[in-house]
Amino acid sequence: MSQYPACMSKVKASYDRAELAELFADAAPPTEDDVSVTNDGRRLDSAEAVIAFFEQVKAERAESLGAG
Image 1: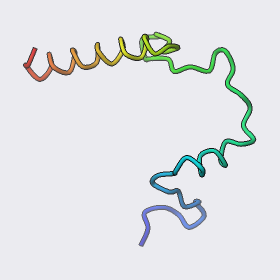
Image 2: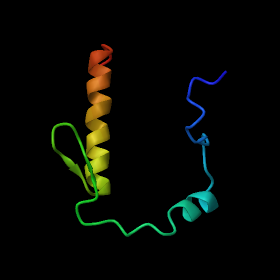
Image 3: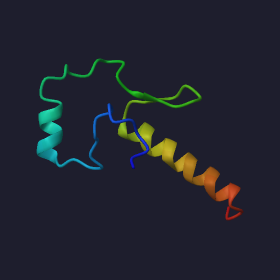
Image 4: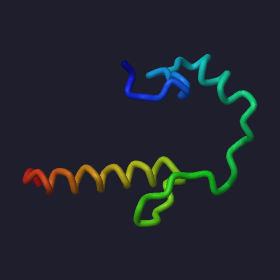
């Protein structure tokens, strides 16, 4: 027996590129403010910002595990 109600749609675990393209074919283009924002308010609006964020996460994780 499923843990979800029968009225819920079934969701695939993964999609290939063609399926994703089909799902988003009619979507509006992203807006200027359509970016990820961290809990502390940092906008991850460039590759550099994302890399810096994950470097910080990596350092904090290493510190919390006693490796750094």
